[in-house]
Length: 159
Image (tube, rainbow, N blue to C red; front, side, top):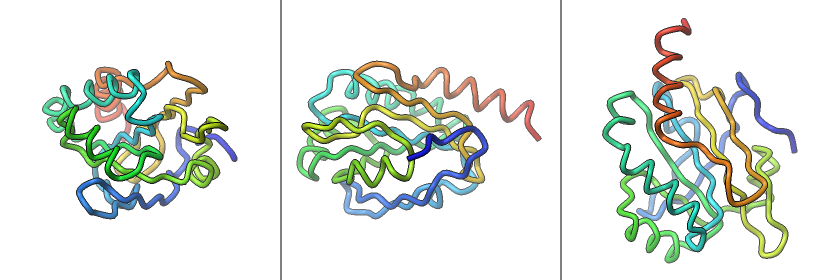
C-alpha cells in the first residue's frame, strides 16, 4: 500500500453511486480537474461538514472546472440518506471495500469497525494526482477554498 504522490496517475476505481450509476475514476473526470473524497461515513460529523462545504462551494468549483465525487463504506440506503440530508448534488459512492481501496490509494483504514479514514485527492485533467491529503483520524482534510486556489494557480502556472 503506497501513498499517491503528486504526478502519480490516480488508479482506476469504479464506485457505485447512490443515484444508481457506476462511476470510474479518473476516467469519468477526463479533461476536468477533480476532487475525490473518501469519508468515514454518514455518522461522522467532520465528514458531513466537509461534504456540505464542498456542496456550498459547488458554483465556484464548477466555474473553476472542478468536479467532485465522494465515497464511503456505508450501505446504499445510509449513503443516500446522508446525501439527501446534506443536499449533495455531486456523486456519492457507497459500499467501498475499505481494504481494497486502501491498497490502490494508500488511504488509512480503521480496523474495527472497518471504514476508510478521511482522504482527499485533487486530480488534474489527465487523471494525475496534484495533491493528496491523508488523515489517520477525524481531522485533517481538503477544504474547497484551498482546492479552488490550487486549481487556479495550476491553470496559470503549469503548462
